[in-house]
Every structure is written in C-alpha cells, then in structure tokens.
Image 1 (cartoon, rainbow, N blue to C red):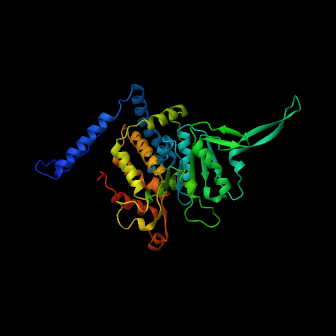
Image 2: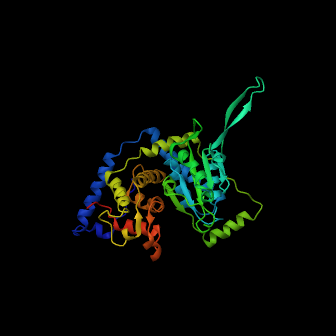
Image 3: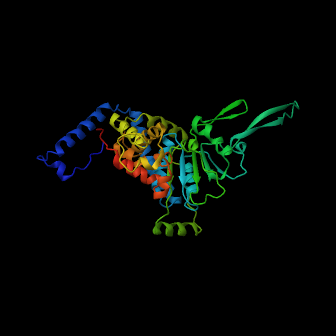
Length: 370
C-alpha cells in the first residue's frame, strides 16, 4: 500500500479536529489490510507482470497514438473487467486507431464493422447457408460466422444503423453468445466491444436506446489533442516513417488477469460509497443536495454500482495495488454514470449536462457514511 502524504494540520498533535479523522483513517486502512487476503506467489507474479505489461502497452501505443493516455487506461480497465466501452468524440481523433493498436499490443483478433443504415443483423452475427457436399451431392446447412466472432470488435459509428441491427450486439455483449435460428454459438473469450459515436452529427442517426447504452461499462469522451500533440500527429502521419506496435500480452494471460481482477478485495465502506453515489442519482432519494434531482428524470440502475466497483478493481490493479480506494470510485464516476442518468427538460433549459450532474453528485455525497 502506498503511504499518503499528510497535511501539516493533520500532523499537529494538539489539533482536536484532526485526531478523530486521523484515527478513523488509520483504522479503516488497518481493517482493509486485515480483510484483504494474501496474494499467492503466482497471483503476485501476475500482478507484477500486469504492471510491467501496462507500461509496455503504453509505450507501444505511444508509437502509433499521440496522447490519449487516459483513454487507453479506460479501454484497458474495461477489457480487464469484461466490460465494453463507448467512445464519444468527433471524427478524426484517432478512436479507430486507438482500438486497433490496443488489440495489436494484446495480440487479440481484431474486427472492425462500419455501421451504415443498410447494415443487417446477419451482417454482424453471421448466417446459415446451404452447402453441397462434393462427394455425396447432399446439401447441408452450414453456419458462416460474422465479424462478431472475434476477440476485439470495433463497432464504428454505432448510431448510424437501425435499432434492429444495434440490438444484434446485445446478446453478444451480455452473454458472449449469438443465437442464429435454433442454435446458439458461443464466442471465444476474451470478447470485447468498443463502439464509437459522433456527438455532433445527429441527422440521419438512430440514438442508442437506454437498454443498450446500459450494456456499456464506460462512456468515455475523446477530447481534442493539445497544440503540441497535434503538431506531433501531423509530423508523424505525413512522413514516410510508419510506426508499428508490438504484442505485449497473450490472450491466455489476459483471461487469467480478468479472473484476478474480480478477486481484488474491496472494503465494505468503499462498496457502500459506490452504492450511495449511484443511489443519490435517483430522484426521491434523500441525502442528495438541492439543485440535482430537479434536473434528473431517471437515475442510474444497480448496474452502475457494479461497474463502479469492478472498474475500481481494474484501476487499482493497473496501478499495482491489490485493494480499491475511494479515489478509484470517484475517478470513474463520470465514465460510468454519464450515459445512465436521463435528464429532463429543466436540464436542457438551464444548459446542464450529465457531466455537471455527476460532478455535483460526487461533491454532494460524503465519503464517510453519516
């Protein structure tokens, strides 16, 4: 565990306000340490291997993608937690390049589907076809798998296709299987979906329904690069030199890491904090500050609490820690909640977006339960 830096006020023995807080923090840390099961030698080696691999992944991705280290971290957390990620950003920010490069560094089978208005569900999932046996001349039904049968699926501009085709991803994302006719076909793990969406060009699009948005663990906003980063992008993409990323992890190691993430211990106080933060987004729940619920039509479901805890475990283990802190929950709150809170007309009238609501929720919900 990393030792936190204390403020001068907290170090003052005669400060009566600091003594209870310091004692409570020390007691909570001791309780978390005693409750955390000891790592086996094999798991400890895997955690160390992940930390080393994470540094190598960032190094390899940086050869191709300039900046966006935070996006890469959230993509990795979603993959480690067996979740799926929705990237929200204008065209030209490198969303597709980030996904393809990350899949290459993890040695995963990558498929990209460009969603269009005429795309059919069978174009994604696959279909049954009739084939003739050249020896017996008898016909038989054979399944031709679609691009969804991959380890890493990039659903590019997912809001460009009708809801029927969007829904073809639901079963695969939740159950990791696809039903065609009367047969169900299992997907080979790991299975990871990264979808992209353009937030500014909404004409002729089909907004994702709330049920499908809820299947995505994170909704991550991809921002514009800085001036220096843009200069580096232009120089790197307009020359004869082509950068290539090398594989760092194997799929077998990734599956073991996914199992290890779910075993990361988390204190009950941190779990309750995540649940209280999500519950505060629901209108009618007491304890939320004024000026929040009047903008919310529907709050987040318990799935948000699950993903906050799982994401906290993934973030902790990427940092080389085998325990979850309150800071992990707060750091992921916006990415987990922004697409799960439905705002009403008051929010639109006052220019309040979901990110502002999440900021107010994090500020209003205390870390320690009263």
